[in-house]
Length: 127
Image 1 (cartoon, rainbow, N blue to C red):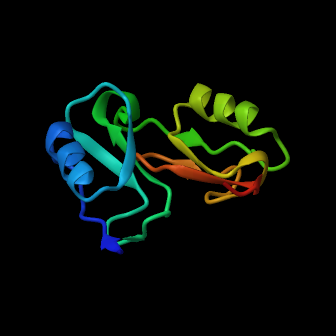
Image 2: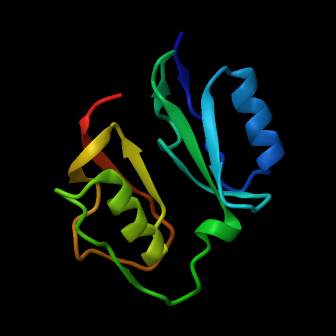
Image 3: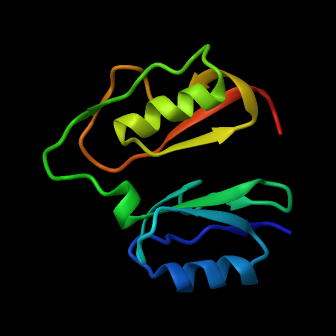
């Protein structure tokens, strides 16, 4: 059974988590906010039974002050735990596929961010 993900941005955390429960899709919420600001995978993505989980980012954790620019760090070759610490220190939401050593990342090192985006890290060991 496959489901297309709706766009959850701007919707309440309670509504979105109830909907994902009813769709039997695993999820986790990052942040303490009550409104979803960003999701990964993106709206329209097809989720199968073993497609992993949806990560929902709420306003407080993923909030970016207007005009603040962040530089994407280079996580390739680093241990996943170290990579997470580097991204968290920079205030950039991050999501991992697999674990172990980071092999590639969805945003280039040195890329400038001035809005909420999530960088996905692809690791050596697939889950």
